Length: 388
Picture 1: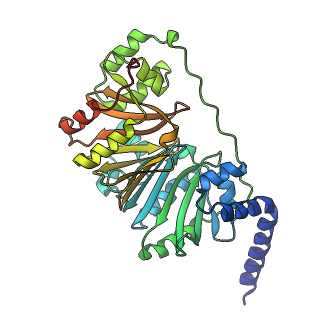
Picture 2 (picture 1 turned 30 degrees about the vertical axis):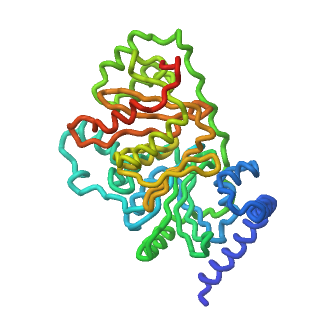
């Protein structure tokens, strides 16, 4: 054995021993919890143990878990390289919702990344491209990234519950909360996965993640301090639904506060139970929908028809072969039917006032919304006396 190889092996053994000694209590507590509650999801296990999900994962560094480089550009390049993995399962979640899509991510065509020669336009294009990592726009794996919110990255190679080896890339924010996960779903991608892990392996494989506290939720501005007339005028002048976030920033409003103060007839409050009606009717009538679900780091989008819906243990689910959606309906507070820029959406919030999921009707470019979608939104159960 070469001296360099022997030295690397010795360092790996010592590192693994250090990792196992670094936080044995947490590793042991998690092992015991998994035996006691084998069906407990890792996010809920972390909450039970009083730590973050990233910290739980880090207890297995050296035993199938590898820390990857964690600079903003590294995250972007990892996701760009992940376009070569082939069929994957992409999972994004927030506190009360999970969206899972199996498919192949779409790569941007070369002409879409080319410079135009106009400095201002090219600058905007480059910034946009930085946030999409060379693809993921539309198609089966449809993602929007906010890489500034990413903090930790891991490659995980471990047996799954079915005994087969699972390979995944897992990303977390500064508080150790899951941002996004990608699971490899094809044999041909294994070599690509292994090369990616080797190229982006972090030199420091310790468990010290320096987890930060979650930022406190911003306090809403009092309604009487909002320039209601100007806000409602800005709402009615929207020509594109994407202008809405600019309006929120301009007037310093939370999303649900804006719905509450919207012009007459532009936002109607509906019951949380309406999420079942929306999903069940979409499946029954085969209405194509878009579902947006995410967190501060990633938003994932599904577009298409759904087939199977079902309730289970406080959750309401879509359980199709290539698409799953899980909504913790026991924690939903209410929803809204919202009209902005000639587009109607349905959005559901949890008991903390946080957005869980948004739905839109699928429509062709430059064509009106399907009447079937508009009819569905009109029939969702309103909350009497709470229209705005």
